Length: 505
Image (tube, rainbow, N blue to C red; front, side, top):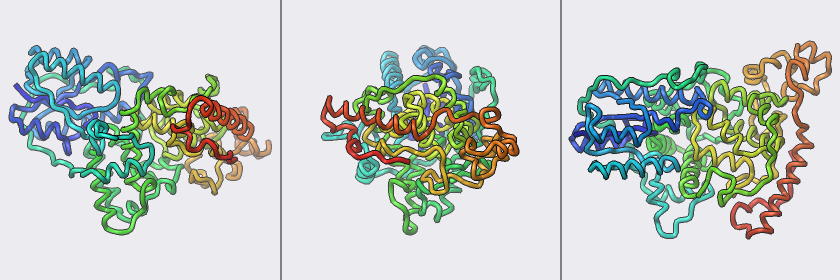
């Protein structure tokens, strides 16, 4: 009988507490991955995202094989799969099942069912916190706990705790079994080839982290709000670290990133949270806490969320999703997202604001679902928290009346490149458009459009809304929603920015 190590999000060998514990038990170690049909949905999860995750699994299996072991890939629901293992239907049996805990709603129910099933068959279960810096369940159970809704609040929680150093890769016992091959994208039903440029896997993730931290000046001076929004058009070059997809699937441990960054920061003066690199890790931690501690966090009905009468206009949603709004900056970002599976966080701010309170007045849940499908770093907790923030409906939102201008200039807080390189890469229709018109091509005279071989309304769409008019109308509607909430309940939740006067952009 062996120790079954169930890989889910912790797709790595380093700092894997379940794996370390299994090796110490001395009963043999069987590493498994279960291809759960719950996650196999080509309409809900895009090919880039699944491809990056698959690369991470392949990297894990290659490393295991180098160490004389292998990843057993099983197919089916976790309940039926473990039922088969517990009943001896495989060439390995289970004495203990070990895994890293997952605090998302589906995972909590799934793991409870597996623990119940294991108990029925006399199999022990051990689980460990590891996907976040803090043990969310343990912290949430402490007396007087109140879920933080600010970066400073989560920073205090982290600083009060002792974040242990990452664990080394343990010495694995030999394990080999025939069959159980890795799945393919074709098997899952994906027809299009992935186009993401980031390479998945623990080894690549650790290489990226090492490269980032080798530039001590970059790490110490990092300020997320100052990084370039129009980035990613040149392969292998980003204005940010590019670590988010590796953290999403656990290819790189959050503790490894935390301590690597802390070590660099200790070498000299540095920026502070929330703009610093540590500040980005704190935001991630905050959203995991909120998602785990808030009923229906993924729904507009959750306790923090402002009730807003959003429209549902499929034509507007389709234009936004396909990058055909007539606003080149927005369209370039959405096309980059669809092609590469990634856009800069300020770009995410811009397209989110545009879809919701800024211009189109569509529900944030639509945008969230598009992001969840297309991003290679799609993470339910962060995706829900960030979309609610950018829709302006929660306490951690910036003031709701601050609307991004989808026609950026060199003074824009979005840090948009004015040289046209990024824009020409993702909106090639405008490659010959003069720089002064590149983000507002409809204002170019007809002869200029003709010379640029881009007639607006023919070769590139006209704007689907007029920004200034849409913004003003939406702010009026949003202000009404804020007043309606005030009339219904005390403004203790989510009302911190409700009384200020609107600011135009």
